[in-house]
Every structure is written in C-alpha cells, then in structure tokens.
Image 1: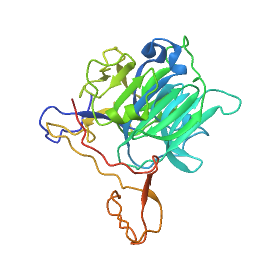
Image 2 (image 1 turned 180 degrees about the horizontal axis):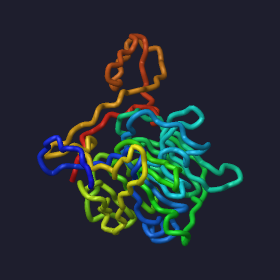
Image 3 (image 1 turned 135 degrees about the vertical axis):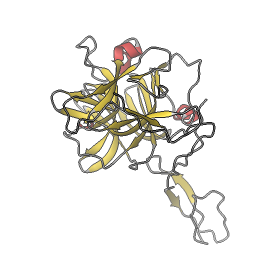
Image 4 (image 1 turned 45 degrees about the vertical axis):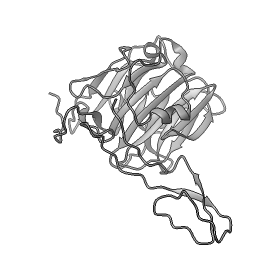
Length: 318
C-alpha cells in the first residue's frame, strides 16, 4: 500500500515532489543507453535537479562521492550528483569517474543549506565537468568519458533518482525532497539554466531533452517521463529493513507551490564579498538586503556562486 502525506488543502492543481527516506527507497529509471539512444552519455550530458536535503548528512562509507547519498546519478555509481560528508566536509558533490591515470575521480563540491531547496546542474562535455548552483558556475574540472557498462547486466548503468542499492546491505540512499529532474544529451550553458530554472518546461520540447521528471503523477508507483520519450521510472522499496520503510512518498511541492498562486520558498541569506575604494561621498546603488556600508567605503558587489547569494523568484507552473 502506498502511503501519502495528507494534502494541506490547496486548490487544484496540486504540484508534487518526491520524498525519500534515506533508508529504504529510491527510483530506478532506464539504462542510460536507452535514455540517450546510444553511448553519447559517456561524454556529453546535462542533468539538473531541485533538491532539499533533510536532517544531518551522513559520513560517506568510502573515499569517493560514489559512497555517499545518490541524488541523481547512475548505478553502478560512476557519475552524478551526490550528498554526504567526505574528508570532514559536508557537501553536495558533482562528480565523474573517467578512470584516467591523473585524476580518476573528478569532484566538484557544492555548499548547501540543510532543509532548504537548492538547484544543481551537472554538465559534462568536451572533456570537462561543470557544476552549476542556481544556474551559476560553481566549479569546473577536466574530466573524460564516464565509465560505463553498456551491454552489461540489466541492473547496471541505470539512471537512478534518490538512491542506489547493492544487495545485501550496500545502500546509497538520499534523505530529502527531489523535484524537476531534467536530462539532456547536450551541454547546457549557465544562461540556459537560469532562463528555465523557475519554470516548468512546456511542449514542444527540444530534441536534446531525453527525460523530464517534473513529478506530475501525484500517486502510484511510477514516475512518468514528461518529455514524451517513455523513459519512466519505477519506485523501489527495499524489503527487510528495520524500520521497514515504504516506497518514495508523493508530497506537496513547497518549491513550486500549489493551486493558482505559486508559493515562494524561503529566501536565502545573501553573502557577498566587497572590494573597497575610499570615497566619502559615494552612494552605492545595489546592496544586499540589510547591508549598511561605512560612510567612507564604496562597495562593489562580487557574488560567489558557491555561497548563498541568490534570492528566489516566483516559481511558475505552465
């Protein structure tokens, strides 16, 4: 039986996200070679996701991000967007394993706030791995083709959302909310990411959009691919857990809101760096909320894309 959290009484239509318990559930979609149509995913892809981690992050069980909580990525865990504590740092990790002699694991750490929504995009192309936070470049690394096993067993090289599991007890399960997962077979630019970050995509879709999980179902044990390409996901519940857990839960999306009026998520605290030029009469025209400059300083705002610099705009469901 699928249990759902009660709706808070919004008017239709209700917009949904998926909640994962970090213990017993995840979503498995299709093999990457099926989603992308060929092995192009090993060298060229973009994956974006809205994610809200819940509760303190666990220490990863190994020395690389593949041993952390899988948010969106492949099984057998060779690339993706993960979360966990590595070497004492609690981060969301955008990473790729190309098995090169000089780097092997190419990793970009992303600062995040627990219990707050964050938008992350992984872009892999031209032997480079880029990570975007709210559509702004947070880091870049040289990184070759992702390692994969096309043609191997059916339970390998599958795109997973919310976790992965290798019996009997190797679990890489995310605890939190996930919404709006988009999968492309091309590189997205920061401008493109920012242009659509606060909006649902609408048909006709570009051909490069290979899977689109906007969490539109609201019930059941299937995650529909809203791109029309048929790359649907299947809910997985790992049996024999203590506590037993359940399938991923359909919950009302705080991110996009529900009903005719979108709901704004909490505003992030603005963190800015400033360079100072003596100017006793200068008056700055753009300052972070609550910032009061010294009379003799002219602040120049320089935003760090890996800090909490960004204010949310209204989210729109088309």
